[in-house]
Amino acid sequence: MNKTILLKNRPKGKPTLEDFQFSDEETPVPAEGEILLKTLYVSVDPYLRGRMRDEGSYIEPFKLNEPIESGIIAEVIESHNPNFKEGDYVNGTLKWKEYQTVSGHGINKVDKNLAPLTVFLGVLGLTGITAFLGLEKIGKLKEGETLLVSGAGGAVGSIAGQIGKIKGCRVIGIAGSDEKINRIKQEFGFDEGINYKTSQDLQKEIKEKCPNGVDVYFDNVGGEILDAALANINKFGRVILCGAISLYNKSEIPKGPRPEGILIKNSVLMQGFIVRDYAKDFGPAIKTLSGWLREDKIKYSETIVDGFENIPQAFLDLFEGKNKGKMIVKI
Image (cartoon, rainbow, N blue to C red):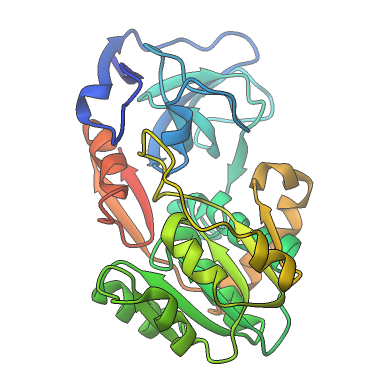
């Protein structure tokens, strides 16, 4: 039998294990033009929480009692498609199933000889592409500027900070533990770090760690951390709104400071960033990231959980900050 994971309920507030349902079905047989895939690695990401809501967004919401999907690395077990052969490894947005058949549209081959397979879910996948294109298209970093990154210990944030260093910037990261602060400084080369959970005055601490102000803010969390960052933004500053994990489980969006005055006074650009809007730029981004990876200019961190049955818990652990870098489930 073929195990699959369905969305059982639309979570109210923080998701729980009760919102997921395991189901067994027959292992599919590929038709003409199809390939049979065996799931090897599953990426769990905060944005999946938004797809659990029944509301319009930049991507279609999950349907109740149907499989959840995310970035997956899979192996071709059987092929009736001339573009793929048995033993190929592929990457794509696929369903949370042990085995599944697909036409081949929307998936890409990956070469395990170039990098470990998990890297194609991280640095050389949407994670790295998000950090790279967010900074390129909106951040437009200049040498000598100050880059502030929230969620700096996470998958996207840790790469964004390293790109900032490659570009010759001063980089400060915000994270939720002293362990993460030490890691982003020692492993990823951040100049300074701020533990938002122990900070007595985040706005003041950002000012102290960014004495020349903030030129570019790469935001992965939103909420009060965004408010504190905006209070320190420079003239012609750029704010990349990549994620808002602090708000994902709120039933009502909390009220905060009004940013209009800061944005107008400082001629600040604040723009929402959806990486899929820049699909035509994925190839050049991967090429540049691959070069940096080969030159050891970019390091990465992964939290790998074993077992198909642990996919839901790994997803829930994201909201407790239990991941170090990219959260991946090995099947």
